[in-house]
Length: 94
Image 1: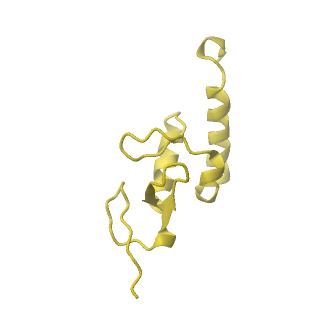
Image 2 (image 1 turned 135 degrees about the horizontal axis):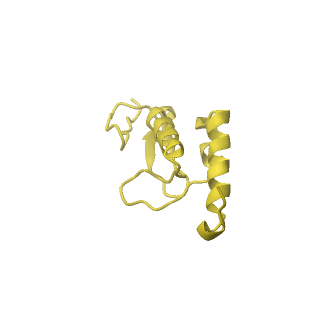
């Protein structure tokens, strides 16, 4: 029985094996590993915290759910973003 191919909802390539996909646990949306790596990196470098990139999905995945996609540098950036976002804007000192 041939394996079922998956489609990435970022690049729309429809020729991925299941092991080439990353599934977001909270909502179940799936994206190819390479697109997810690029998305996470872009969000962190723009100063944000990654959320599910599926259109209008509001789920905020945890750092743990992306552990296998993050370099040590990106993991540290994510931790810093979460820490920064936990401080009310009025209380932030730069």
